[in-house]
Amino acid sequence: MTLSDANALLRSIPAMDDLLNAPWAAEFSSSLGRENVKKIIEETLDEIRREIGAGNSPTKVGVTSGGVKAGLPVEELVVIRATTLLRLKSSSTLKPVVNATGVVIHTNLGRAPLADEAIAAVNEIAGTYSTLEYDPGKGGRGGRNVHVEWLLCRLTGAEAALVVNNNAAAVLLALSATASGRELIVSSGELVEIGDSFRIPEILSFSGAKMIAVGCTNSTRISDYRNAITENTAVLLKVHPSNYRIEGFVKTTAREELAELAAERGLVFMEDLGSGLLGLLGVPGPLGADLANRECSVRNCLEAGSGIVTFSGDKLLGGPQIGVIAGSKKLIDKMKSHQLLRALRVDKMTLAAFEATLRLHLSGRQGSIPVIGMIETDKPALLEMARRLCRMLKRTAACNAVPRTVNPGAGDFTIAVVETEDAIGGGSFPTDLLPGFGVAISSPSFSAETLAAGLRTAFVPVIPAIREGRVILHVRTLLPGDEKLIAASFVSALSRDVAG
Ligand SMILES: *Cc1c(COP(=O)(O)O)cnc(C)c1O
Image (cartoon, rainbow, N blue to C red; front, side, top):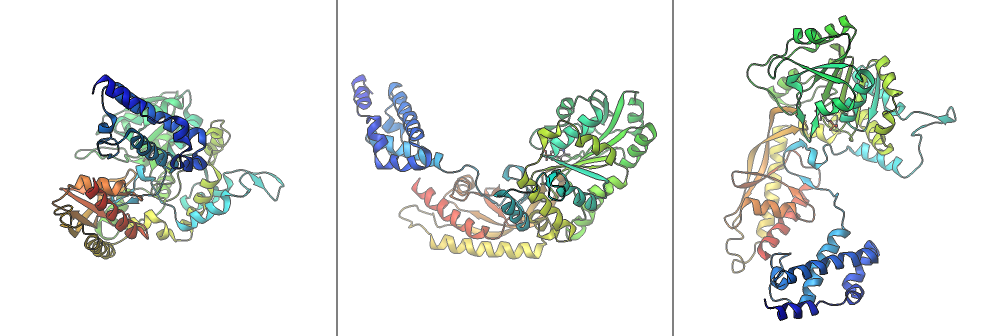
């Protein structure tokens, strides 16, 4: 591009006022505010000027930025790029997606979808004043914790319980109250990074406790703990190996032995359980029995002698993001009066959702909590769901077949029911896969990656898995109504692929 071409292009950029007053821009002023619309148009113009300055003709660059065809007048390019940005900024980024990954507790997708009863409770409390910290009988200040403490004690057998923002906060508060300025002994095999960067050693350091790691990665004996105890030791800590499992020769120390040692030496025995299993999961078949043997419920851990246990509310419990500390009343009382609690306390909407979820567990209706229902769904029911989804997608593909003159082969879909391996996720049962079913889609005319990207970026994003060159939609993690959303996103993925 010559200098005079560049200058001509720069001169053809319309004036800001004209752009701002054009109907396509004015339309966004009501939602974004005129100043913000102006800012976005300015950014668009700057970008186009930079491209011209660098010797690129933006009307050609436009081909790669947003699918704009070459040879476009600059004014049109401005409008297309600015409206794309304005639309993006006008819509929320936190929005519902369809989880077709088969991973039930998916941290990136918001972990546990709430039960209807929990959603209703949030709805009731969110827009009104409430008894959050008010005791109507006394006519004065009450405590936030009272709303869930009794329920947690009944469900776990604990003497006392306290809730905070999440399990990381629960570990932090529990250790700050019991081990600050003192020593804490933990097995080096348990010093792991859990999920999205929960690193036990770092949380420990914030609590002011000095960490003494004992044993080696695959073997820690009770004598290792005993030999490390000094007059400065306050806590023995056991951490649940949530998202990893060391296979082969492994020697871990039983909680009963640790509890006995802690009692003998006047120490606190604390356990970070992570997943917060409240009762038996009704997983069908031999896998169910196997899981029951390995994952300790909160109640069993406390009965085996753990003084304090910490766990999340949005893993196997199936509630909102929250952290629970349950166990000895004497220790929990110390945490209740700790200043740190003020920074970690729980919001009213979370408490409302959590209380309602706990009541479902208490009344034996935990099967209606989505994550528990999904984990307990048996193979015949999953097969039926997969067959229904398969039929729907075959119909959708047939009705939306693109004429072969436009895109040869676009109608050639292979859509079939397949067996899948699903997972509980969220660090629970790391190596146990649940047998399930799904629908596999493949086509010679576009890759699994292209189809998956089309589904993920549809109006309602559908998040699938990809296996052996096929898109797989696992049905275990679908919620009621998701099948229709998948069909709609499938249509949009097809039409976009053809247009692009
Ligand atoms: C998941 C998990 C955590 C972190 O819990 P959050 O609720 O995400 O803060 C900590 N410890 C263990 C053992 C876990 O499994």
